[in-house]
Length: 318
Length: 294
Image (cartoon, rainbow over all chains, first blue to last red):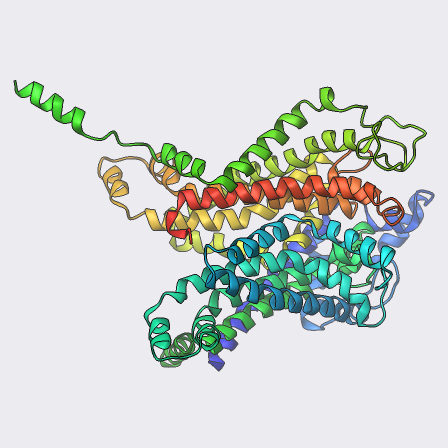
């Protein structure tokens, strides 16, 4: 198992390296140069050249790429923002936790709503509970989260005045963003839960458990849901990674200074170090999420755990 | 006499329906899918006839600023006194076509990539899959934002940025289907009569592997409409004064607390379109693979 994790972590290195090269290249070929954006339209050619020199942008592409990779991966230095001149690593350390809290809250709401909905739909297949759950899921997938966010602000902040409409502070500031971000996730997860539950619910061991007199609640939670978990875990892991990298819109509406807003401002101001570092960090977190999903498979299914251990032994033999 | 018997026997054989007809028939039994199809077709007709149906010019300003729904303006007016209904009708031309075109462009590229990876396998497949791994390790929205920054904002550039996001998923799906089908008997048969690789891929394997992609395309259009709106909402997609639905919502951000009608109607337009496409996609999935229907 340890070897499997190590192998996966090692495999992440070329992926992250490639992401860094990809984002660096894309940003380099962006129209609109950072020096022109920083100095504005009144800047003279001499000012622009001086700033290009200062930022190191006049060096050849490959030289800049080499020094960027060296700084990032060998010295673990994410550089300084062209605009604020502050350390990008420090800014990320400030913004990432907010995005992380928002993502965790979003996923917690998704899971708490989606699992019961999916299980209810599967256990009442073809009945009104099933139709209602799946109709909710369908509407959830179809409603744009930024529109829902605005609607929630109108209802809960403007009309009812229960929750703050925007900004950062206590946990109450994350309630509306998390609810608006979670609806799409609830829908996808509930559909997957229903589908996985239906796959296992008619299995022989479920009939056996019922025949033995096990209570229906125990049959569903201990026998059926546990065996239906693998595809559900996949969806949760993927959604977590996506949410982490896709909170830009929600952060913009609710004025949460998180990673999404940081990267968008970096893109708009052509602040290369901000965008490159942000993308690398999000790619690392996304890859780690996928690794965690694989490890959770092993926790949920002993057969998969045995496979991982077997692979490890094979590696040892060779 | 013998010929007559043969002809009678032929007549007795049930006519074999094509897969396309079977899928259409299956789809027609699905009320949700039919509803989705009807809504979507109706929307296409409406956006096509927008110049006739729209009560005002979408860019025409008036003194009726941020007025709520009334008989004169069924969906109200925006902060510049423009009729929201007219803007929604014209806006569909941007939002829906962006979704459709971005998926179509992605299908062209993913078909080539997925077919090559799936048919040839081995090192070619490995290289292509690793490139797709890299693209997919970036969250979709981030990739689209970066692509949109590289290509610039605007209608066509946003379509291209969106299509890049679509390619990896579609290519992977087609690759998996091609890998499943490449050892089929009909492929062996075409190899044995010396068909070229291009012909085997294009004429035999591709049409037999394409059906799961149809479902993904339908859902993809819905996702792309949503993503295009999100991009416009954060100011990176279609720029104002174009009446793209996301851009309309972005324009109403400052006023949505005092004039909720400015966000309700464009949002509903997006939600109804995506709902219709999801209903259709679900129906198509059931029709194409009845085993999946639970």
